Amino acid sequence: MMRAPNKSASEKIASFVMSFDPSVISPSLRHVAARAIYDTLICAVAGAREPASVIALKYAQGHTSPRMATAWATGDRLSVEMAALVNGTTGHALDFDDVSSPLRGHPTVAMIPALLALGESIGAQGREIINAYVVGFEVTLRLARAMVDDHYAKGWHSTASIASFGATAACAYLLKLSHDQIVNALGVTVSQIAGTRQNFGTMSKPLQAGQANAIALRAVSLAELGFDASADAMDGKQGYTALYADGIDIHLQLDSLGQLPLELERSGLEIKKYPLCYATHRTIDGLLDILKEYPLMLEDIESVEITTNFRATVPLIYQHPQTGLEGKFSMQYAVTAALLDGEVLLSSFEDQAVQRPSVQAFLSKVKVTEGPPPMFPRWAKIRVLLGNGQIIERRVESLRGSTEHPLSDDALIEKGVDCLSYGGQTNCARDLANSCFAMDHLPVSALIAALTGRENANYASGSVNTFLEAGRASILAYQAST
Image (cartoon, helix red, strand yellow):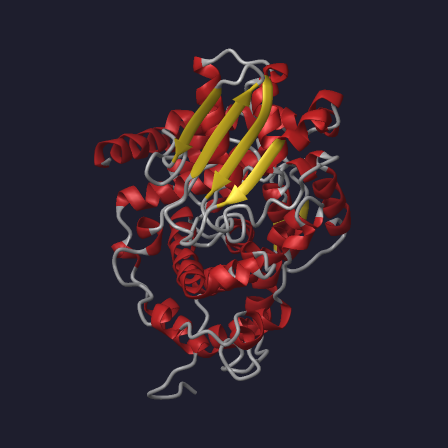
């Protein structure tokens, strides 16, 4: 039963999920969501051959359930929960997927693998997936705004430890669970939730993103069957916020759930240009701009000093990385790779690239410090000291790929070309993008068929041109609105 007048956090989220009206999602916002889905898919394909992805798939093979779904990069048929675990892990394996600054993490990869697996298994329409994604994004970002700063600084990995609630709300919306079932599902999520930044630079970091999806599906599946949990599991005296956020009050943010502008518009999404931790991207942008003006060689440089906004370097836990995974969380390596190679690509994070003697020798020449509070707005200051005494400085605030300066659709598709090639796929990146951009007009099964190249009995091949044209129309409508 719902309590009145003082609802718990779980009850407030459930009320929002039950009452959400998808008509408030504008066409341009629907396209933002479709772009996020495309970005997640291509990153998963690119990451499919990473050791974490291969091992996760081996673990998942053989698990069966009444609901089955597809592993995006291989076409394997897995249980819904295992498909979400594998696709979430592969989608985050290269750390190339989208981010949200207010979350300090990766919202889409924590939700879309679960939503597409569930949607595929129940025959959902693409439009329903976007609606559910917006619901989950709203819950995730409201919780993040309430608690993420200290929560993340203490070592929690917010992609898993916060976004799992958004994934649960999204899946509950897609399944049309009752109010009490949603409350129970959120409580079951509390029983499972975890994720630590100490695992950054290891296979367990992307696993935590996969686990966010599996947690959500397990929670809604149990709740659908009648499994219960405390209505106070999120904000009770021994609940989630007491343990994970020092009892911080999250109700002010939850009371504004669904208020316009929606969080997807207010916070936006940031699409990565470089396949490593987002905390390095302003620095990389600035260094690459410097190299366009000054044809520097690594041996010309005496040292590099990087200063960033407060707490920007918290996830950068490796000063002397030895592997590609460690290099993804190292400002020292980001600086060195950019200066040595003049670019930062997927191949920059192969172990042998990090282990080059010239790289290892230069790492100690990169000094990194943070400025005083506040955390926002975010910025990076670069100071390059040359051997001849010259000093080159840059301050970078705007970031390519950010909400303020988003990648164009064409640039996003070019990222897809690189990702699909890196993952060994021959799919056309533009056709896959168009199928994502046309999700409002497609069943989920058609998107999975376009991704895997597998024939779909429920989707006539003669309709291909129809959905590609719908995708192109979506692009034109988005461009006109912006």
